[in-house]
Image: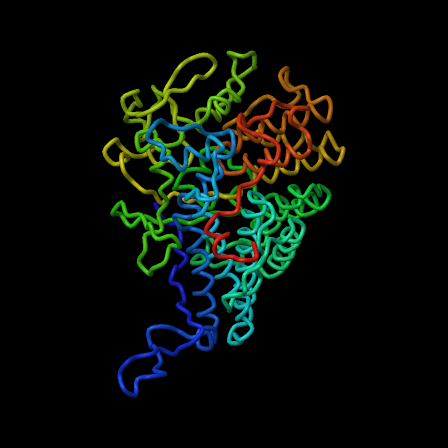
Length: 518
């Protein structure tokens, strides 16, 4: 089952600025600690540099980021999710209600780990020049570090706005920085991604043991996201069009929509950037904030948090559930992506051997087209192949697809619409709808006439919701569309608690306390 999964080593290089320790014993001063590597000894070979960048991936995969708190922070700030019930922890419920204080522990965890990732990436880029035994590997590793640093800054600037900017390691207590301008943070993101796109290979440039490392086309996809958020649609289009369609190094939509969310179909033709997880077989989850340790379980708890028969802390919102086209509301066809994305009472799971009942699902009910029903997420859950006993508690090994080709097509649709190329925009939308397992009628439809720029924008908003719901991009889209005035000119404001000035998260209190430059 795991033939396509690789395990990027997560051993962190333990570094000290000084190799001196102090003792009360006579003649023991200035003794070298042999349990750690000094900076002078840690970056002499390409293997050591690979180990260092693996430590950057370890933070990405950790429970404070993609394995847990990252998806909570995104999903609580968009309109795809609702609380599963009173079991949702207070700090997460506060995010969902918009009551985000600087002390919120979920927000603080994401912030701190993003800067841990940046620090580790900076350690790679600061010291790589000393590696000369394999310059090809060295340059690729620097590209990986710059991509991952750009991803961290993308997460920060798109959710917090103006944030401190570090591109070298902080070596002294007074090395903290004030908030950089949003423009300067985006400039650094673009610079890092430009460098990464040159240094990184395409998919075929990696051996089988390195599948899961970032590629040049992941850099172009993230660059497209960043340029769009900046409002530079021309540059976004240019970056996105560099991602090839088809071929050994290109990307295509999978025929089967569910291939993007199941274990057996990881690293498929649609996947551009994945966070890799592995199952140790003991229901282990590494609660360490940064995923450290040579034997740490790099599993994700998403399968537990959203599992319809697990904790069920998050469920699809009624708004999301009712976004899908349905014959009940006059559409020509029920959009099958609803059933691919969501489990409802009466659905089968466990390879078709079990039926989901209300008693399986603790907490709140949903309303879909006027009908009350228990509903829960299907995306990234493992109950499609697990029985009740196995699925009730199982931190999973299902890779998190962070960027997939469907998003690239939808970003291109938005770019073309903003660049006054309506036919091209509609064409990209219809590629998404023509997926073999979806086969929705092409635009225009009676519900989406796509006969003006605003009408095409409405279709883009709809298509991104039903195609990418619950995939940690909706909250960022909302911020961009709000800035462009599309709420309320195209659609009603989607966040009930929103008020002017509340687009971004507050700087964490711990950062304010520790950084005098803030």
